[in-house]
Length: 443
Image 1 (cartoon, rainbow, N blue to C red):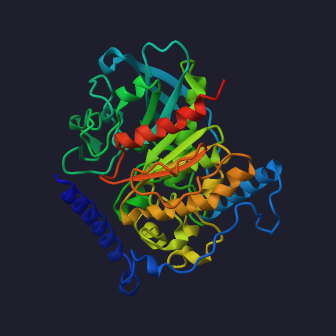
Image 2 (cartoon, one colour):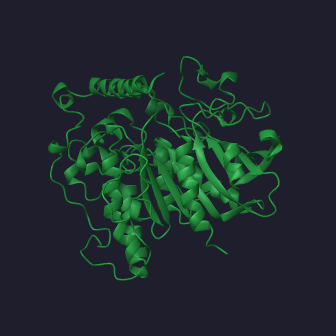
Image 3 (tube, rainbow, N blue to C red):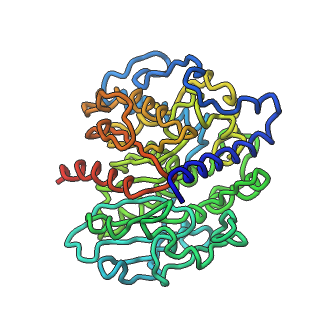
């Protein structure tokens, strides 16, 4: 497929999604469901991350801790729903062996949340450099179609969770053998170059998001099926509440439990973890990184609306498209901001600021639906928090062109690229280069 046809395919895919959303909206609302014209962006005002809701200014680190919690409470109440409390984990290595031409060790770790190993489980794939002499840094993310897509090894268990069907790889809502090693090669739309990451000294930890909570695309199935999996741990759902735990909150919660597992693993350095994810799983990584201060480096990739970009810009994906197409990703309270973004008493820059003073690198994708400029502006608006906490903020540069790394600072950075949606080798190289500088200063 040529570069031109790739771009056409991606654009058509977004158009099809938008058309499905339009069917669920009134004809009058559907007439201007997406804006791609910078001149039509309405005036907007962003809240100061260093000012409390009552007008008081943040003066020191103690104040910031209180302001940070205030911001997190807003996002739980108004957008992502309540993040469930931590749960004790029980783990068991169910398979291990040698992988990646002998350079890596493979472990498959099953995680339960009840001492008797009943109920929901998550299967983690843990790949470590075979010849490492000490604890190694870690890259962690959730994946879409199962751990077997990341390696060609026949020993990797075929994922058995509910997944959205496609014409070739997912049949009867289950992964097929055709998915084995699907994203292991570099000539793929999504790629996980694990051999390269091992050679850089990193371990890789991942689990399928379907193990956590199903992610139906059909609206009729979202309410019925999405709140299963780990949701069974939290009792009956109170349908009268507008801030119930969402799928995004559950995926973020699972990443936090993955961190619990890393802390217990003597081969892994829990002080040196890159938390990442792409698209909706980039949103989940961003949420987990904002709520859980144990993650030292957070790298959300191509999150789209509801992740990094400013909602008040009303450019590309917006609140109405998201609350119509993905009812299980956001709590009901967020619905009131559809076509009403300017009434929001918050925006995504506040969520980004909750990662300060830790390291945050945002990696964008040059497609209007994802509003890469809105990502950059969100980072600029959050940058004063890093400076307040005596860390360098976003470099004082203009919105960078594709592949231009001038906006990557020491603790806060931004970079974007062209080509397909999904992880590319560029994305992995940028994040490890960024994290290496942070980790090299740790004793």
